[in-house]
Structures are given as C-alpha cells and as structure tokens.
Image 1 (tube, rainbow, N blue to C red):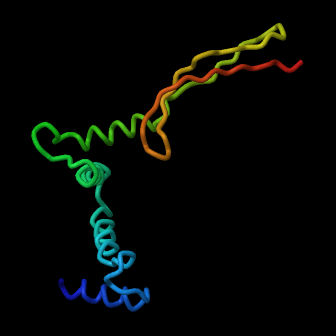
Image 2: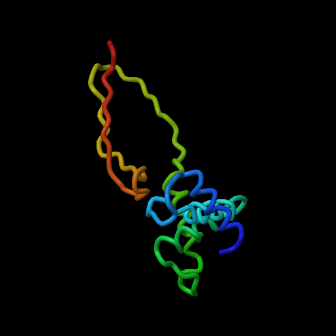
Image 3: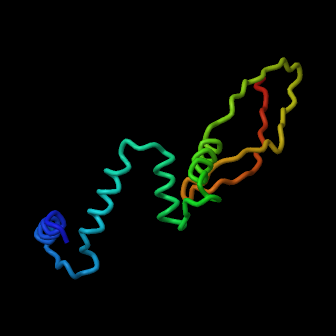
Length: 128
C-alpha cells in the first residue's frame, strides 16, 4: 500500500470506530470509487459507457466490440429522446366519444434501464 492508502485507512478506521478487518469497514472500496469518479469527470459519455461495459459485462475492446460503447450510448439516446410531434385538432359536431387504440410507444424501465415496447389507448369525451 502506498502512503495515501495507509493514511486513508487510518483515518477511516479512526472516524468509523470499526475495525479494518470487519466486512462493513472497507475504505479502500470507497477510495477506488472516488478515484473512478475523478477519472470519469470531464470525459465523454462514450468513455463512461466503455468503463461501465468493462466492469459489468466483461466486454473487451477487440475488432468485433470496438464500436460497442458508441452503439450503446446511441441506443440509450435513441430510446430516451422523444420524437417530435404536432397536436392535431379538428371540428366535431356531435357528442360522440373519440377513441384512438393501440398507439405504440417505446420507453426505458427506470429501475433496470431496460427498454420495453407497448401500446396505449386514449379516448376523449366532448364536454357539452
């Protein structure tokens, strides 16, 4: 261990009141996380995707996977950028309900960041 890690270890044990050997007291993991955050600051999203893919999937930067971080970030942007649309209005003379069924949409699960597709139906009752 270098001097910085030794100092960090001593300060962490002193401040936490727990032994270095207990599983819940591992300041080196905190130090590694802090260093990763500093390393990522000022970098682009593609670099962050590269680190994420390496750490979570075992992805390798080889001939086949070289553009994977770029494709991954493009996919996330595509799934989370809404398409432009314009509202349409039209005159209605009667009191009938207007129903539009099975409108397709794509979204991303906020909990797992997994894309999903579905449909939604909508209706409007005219006031009168």
